[in-house]
Structures are given as structure tokens and as C-alpha cells.
Length: 132
Image (cartoon, rainbow, N blue to C red):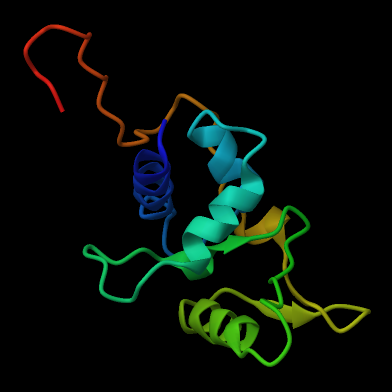
């Protein structure tokens, strides 16, 4: 899977996260068959432009501990994610160390790998005239 296919698969799966549900970067990676690529999932969402159609509900992806990533010093990304989740009715709390957190037991969406469409078309065999 090349970079464009990876990003397309990530966005396709994220679009399937139900309203008022969240999942983790790592679970998205598992669903697309790349279980060790959770950081790459985060990068794909980090560089998502706002004009992608249909929209990708990036706010529904959190860490495996249910925390909202800070996105580095001087950014308001964590607050924007909190606001977007709360607008959907998802409860976001402040944890003991000040982190923003979602209760994955209540709000989590974790379908088994192989049970949802990941949006990838099979590649054509070499020499079949279907070239890319």
C-alpha cells in the first residue's frame, strides 16, 4: 500500500465511525491491515485539509487510552477536538493530570478487523492491460 492508498484507507474508515462514537489511532491501523502504523494514522489525520469531500470526522479518533492528543505547544487542536466531540454529545472530561479524556468503555467503537469496508480495491495483476 503506498502513501496515497494508506491515507485513502484511513479516511474511508474514519468516515464510518458512528456519530457519538470514538476509536483509537491504533484501531484504525488494525482495521486497514497495518497494525503497527498508529502514528501514521495520526499523521494522515494531522495533515487532513478541511476541503476533503465527503468530510472526515477526524475528531472521533483519540489515543488508545482515550486521551485527546495535545498536538504540540501553542496549538488549539485539542480544544477544537473537544469542542467537536462535545457538539456531538460525547462527554470529554479533564483527567487527573490535566489531559482531555473520553471514556472508551462508554463512547468507544471497536469493530473486529475484516468486518468493515476499508475502501481498497484489489490491485490488477501485472500485464493485464489495466495499467495505472
